[in-house]
Length: 473
Image (tube, rainbow, N blue to C red; front, side, top):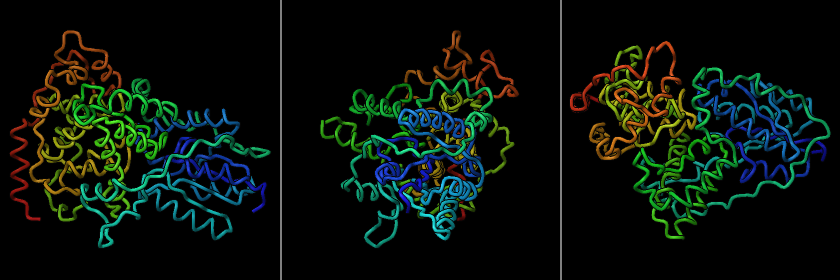
């Protein structure tokens, strides 16, 4: 490879400079490095909120690269076509990227790698999005893990690579290829007026992600094992937003957690277990790609879930107007912030799939459209775990009662008051913001009466249990 032939470094879900194996190797290789981002069908297939959040992340990455004397080149079109064009324009002989693991990205990357190699172009993929490559964790029999706890035991004592430093210098080419303008991509278009409501809650870019990790380790992690279940508290790391787009690496989070555990901070191991839960989701998605689109347990295909998205109950659930406060508070938090507390996610998902007997795929797609921390593996595993169709030892017994869950985890109703305006004489700004984020066509206002339950908790539980008991699958 000629020393002057540049390396095209294709950024995807790895929007950082530190602990970036592909960038680290490229910066040390010698040739110029041209960072690129492609708007291809995989990107265009993202939901409204993830696409909006990607746009914010790309803005931050572009600024960071400029500070390093580099640039971010933007192109749109089918990935292989665009890469071929860039190779021709720049004389590049190498295209490097960080691996992705969702089925659509795997199919794209497999095609790209094979075609470029056939044309004499080095096509090289690197790790960096996960602690462990999914194919490196196996049972004693050589299979993959189907239950989380044995998976955790298998990896908890594994050596995790130390994070790599950001490159001191990114070699630049003598001339840069033309770039499209990020503003012209209009990645925020599908958010409509909700973009302005959600944007202040986003913590964008590598520096913000590192600050978030530092705050969590200094002030929160000690009590994390308990505080993580109380949605009204600042009791979680909120790093899912940054991990989703790779603005921070799991290696950086892991080693921070290990240091906290060595310092005797009680909640550190629970934090490490949550990182490994993310790994487990990717492990399952790699070995069983149907996780993202079909029942992980095929025998659940016969379960009588409704797939009627036009049902009044589904519409009420989507609006956050089920009349069940804990469910509605979670949905409204999502519309205002682009995130939802994990305890609320479980309650919301359980209510849809069990009390309303609605297929988990409807909820999965709705979250995919509305979460700025959307992650293909974690979202799919979360919904299948809640529905009972996923990898779990006791799905039959898990029908969350949203009222008792509220009493246990939101005993003073602080979380519910924060997000539900109806019935409050002077509702907080956070609760009123929901009415600014939602579509105008819903015709809702803070002065509306709060609705009666579309399905009462006890009634819904009985419906779900009756369906499970009479199942013939």
